Image 1 (cartoon, rainbow, N blue to C red):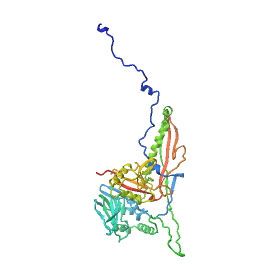
Image 2: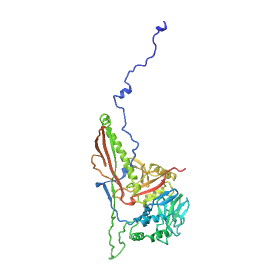
Image 3: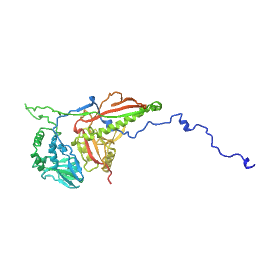
Image 4: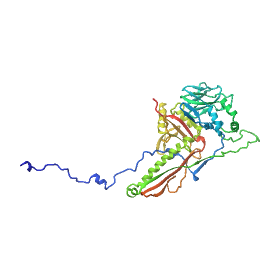
Length: 469
C-alpha cells in the first residue's frame, strides 16, 4: 500500500448529542434573585419612631412659657492662628440673647482676647475672683469642684462653642465656683468685665437690654426654666391660697413637613418585553423607594432645620469624660431624662462601647427587638444607625431619646392618604411618556421630626471611637 493509498485517520470532533446549555437558556428561565441593593440598612430610627399624622403639612409644638434664654454655642472664624468670635454669635449668651445691634456686638467681639492653652493647664481655680467670660473656640476642658469628703469631683466637660463665667460680666464680687483644667490643647477667647463695662457705658441700647434681661431672670421659674406655677402645701386652717395659671409660649415652633423626591424613568420597551418572570417597573420602583427611605432617615438625623443632631437642646448635650464611650458616660446620658426608650449610635460607635465594656469585664444584656437580638445598657436598647456622622478625627455622637406624644418625647411627622399612594407616606405618580418612549414616575415622601420637650432628646458628643494602641 502506497502512502497515497492509506486511509485518512484525522480525528474529527465528536458530534453533539444533546442541546447545549447556552442554547437551552434561550428557551427557559434560570433561577434568579430579585435585584439586590447594598444601600439598604436596618433603618431602626424609622422603625422605632412613633409617626404622627400631620394634616396641613405642619405640626405645632405648644410648650409652657420658659424664661430660659441663651445657653447656646458660640461660633468662631479662624485666620491662620488667629481666632475671632462672630459678633452675632454673642447673642447666644443668656445676657445678650435677642440683642441685635450689630455695631455694639462687633465692639464686644473686638474686645475678646485670644488665649491658647496646653493640655493639663489650669485655666481658672475654684474660689479665685472671676473677672470675665471665657468662650471656648477649640479644645476640651474639664470642670471640677471640691468634694464634700475631700478630693475633686468631676462636674462637666466643655468643648468647642461652650462658655463659662458669664455671671462675672456684671458681678464684681463673683468668684469661680469650679476649677477648669484643659484636657487637650486649645484656644479660648476672654471678654473681661472691664471691657464689657466700657462698651456698656457707651451703648444705651445695651444697658436697656441688660436691665430687661435681669427682670426676666427674676421671675419665678422651675429648675427647667419654665414659668413657675404658685401653690401652697402643708398649710392648716383657712390659709389664703395663691392664684395660678399655666402660661404658654406665645410663638410656639411649627415643624413643616420636608420632602424627598425623585423621578423614576423606565423605557416602554423594557416594561413591555422584559416583565417575566419579574415585573421590571415594580422592581425599579421597589429599589427607588428603598433609596428614598435611606435619604429620609439621613435627613431625620442630619438636617439643620429638624434633624435630631441639630435640634438637641444645648443643656442636653454632654461630653465624654475621657474620650471613649465609657459606662459612666452612658449613665450620665441616660439619667438626663425619664423613660429613655433607646440609644442610637453608629455601628463603629457601638463597637467602641463594646470594647469599653469588655475592658471592664461588663457583659450587658440583650433583648429581642423585632426578631433581632440587640445589645442594651441598663435595659435600654443600643440600636445602630450609619447615618450618624463620623468626623475626620474619628469621633461621633450617641443619641438617647424618649418617644411618643403621650410621653412628651420625640415623634416622627408624616402625612398618609396621598394621591396614588404606594405605601404609607410615599406616593408614586405617573407623569407621562415622552417622545423617546420613556415612562416617568414622580416618587415623593413627606416627613419631619419634632422634639416635644427639650429633655426628650440627649446627645453624647465627640465620642472617640478609634481603637487605642
